[in-house]
Amino acid sequence: MAIIPQKSLFGWKEVEKSSDLNRLVLILDLLNDEKFMVFLEKMRKGRRDDYPIRAVWNSVLAGIVYQHESIASLRRELLRNGELRQICGFDPVKGSEAVPPAWVYSRFFKKLLDNADEIDRMFHASVEKLKEHLPDLGEHLSVDGKAVESYAKRKKDPSESSDPDADWGVKTYRREKPDGKVWEKITSWFGYKLHLVVDADYEIPLGYEVTKASVHDSGMLLPLVEELKEKHPEIAERAAYCACDKGYDSAENNRALYDDYGIKPVIDIRRMWKEEKTSEIKTRPLFEDRADNIVYDRSGRVYCHMSDPIREGETRMEMAFAGFEKDRKALKYRCPAAAYGIECARRKTCGGGGYSKHGRSIRVPLDKDRRLFTPLARSTYKFEEMKKKRSAVERVNSRIDQVYGFERHFIRRQAKMRLRVSLALTVMVAMAAGRMEQKERENIRSLVKPARSPA
Image (cartoon, rainbow, N blue to C red; front, top):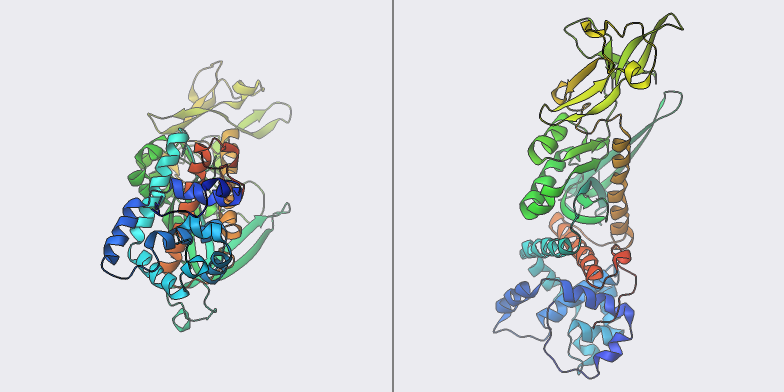
């Protein structure tokens, strides 16, 4: 907290009556900003101090907490709200005259831009603080990219725009209809993209990056996980799963997540087999070097062509998943006839082996196809359950838009956008840590719910 040493015209009991103001107090108490305040004050030493650094900084945080879309809106609130001015640290004797003019905030934000790494430090310090209350923080991760439009007018040529850092981003949504036809929708925006890694259970951001809108999601997954490992090694060590949409689908992402970080990828798969023109399930032989009755499809499911005595022919049956063998990096599957008690005339000679009550077993190494075959088999209920967790990052993105004001903003240039994102996410995590300290776990995601009075 940026501590303000000053005399008060009224007691804290009056402030305590306003739970709305307590939300700001919660942030100021939890934020590890003292080192940054001392640094800024040393920079100002010997100059006029009409508008104290700490008070201006606290008022910037108040603008985020109370969802002001601009400095002008924040200043209007400070001019009318004496309690808010005092909590921020402005001189109560001066009254509304203590509120800084707009140019003071412009200069202050320039200082914040020059020291943006300090805001990053505060964000990660808040994550560490939250980790003390949530020992399972980071066990389930989710990653996604979010479109953030620039305030600049759209131009076909980005160099002609008032925001030369921004460019065009395009996102394509595809859905397959029951008849096999593919529905497609394309959206575009001019600006930037926010890449987030969040805890999928608590919906709390753990890392972020802001890029131009044209940067593809897939290439940002591993840098986000690497930063998480550098900044929060304990969280990265405990991470077990990472859920992403099909925009992150690649062999390298699947390989590196598990081989380099020990995280099981739960990434939806794109439709890549070019010969597929309909919804009919196409298969390929699993063992291409020999004639065999084991095949797999584009979703990574493994099948056996069984001898069906009733139909007097063959029928394709999905093999029973028997687990992941970590030491071999292979998925194990069992004969469906033995697993499910189905008649199969081939069972005694299948695979060239003798009869076994467990039937034939096969192993599929992950390196067969790192996109299709993952440590958590795509055919399992667990995979479907973990895949649903990717919606957590979508809800965080929604709060960033609606609660933290990114649907309506006045930001141009990438550095400013990243600073504004950093401040918002820092407040989000600090608020969550404050809620946990107040034993309000049910409100951990909320910026707007009332906070208890300070003790």
